[in-house]
Length: 289
Image (cartoon, rainbow, N blue to C red):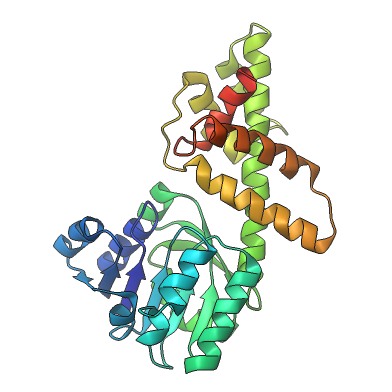
């Protein structure tokens, strides 16, 4: 049994914390909204008043927050993890942020307190977290990953060491290219089928048997056909992620035309008030340019 803290109890953090409790770990949680902590307290977790207070009583601190600034705030801020953790603590950040931001936070923890950090973004979504089957791509010291692997295995089925600090976030950026570009491809295919007067559901089914198959076609096309865009992956998150991708591309001196096209469509969705709608709602942007 490990003493594990979870900071950030949204669509992903909450199911992770529940799986840790089911794994018989001693779990402490923190979220800015007290009401977010209530269900986990009822399930057996302790609630903490700040990230610093949480870190003071945990061997492993897991963070799952929205962006780079939020990670810096909860880890390096005045009441952040760095203010409460000792050198034996390991920080595992599952957020999706830019690689340079991950390296900056890891270096600050190591320099100030000798605290090890893994950037370990995940793929799979909330339902997969509930099932304990997430994919975790980790950057940092491989020996540190092995120390915390039994804890991560509570909600991660595939746990892969990618490379040094920041490498996990590079892998996640690659993941988001495939996820977001394939979602746009699914939207284009379903729109073409509809406008050509054929059944898009039948088209989707046959595409899933050939080279056109993809996880995003399988998951997103039914939402597009049904015009049901109330899924759990809000488009504002993919909007943030695709701009991490494009910022990296500029820094590397490479062009990513498909990602750039997807970014433009997702930006239109934000402009139309779709920030909290599922990313499958890009279908409406294409259908009503």
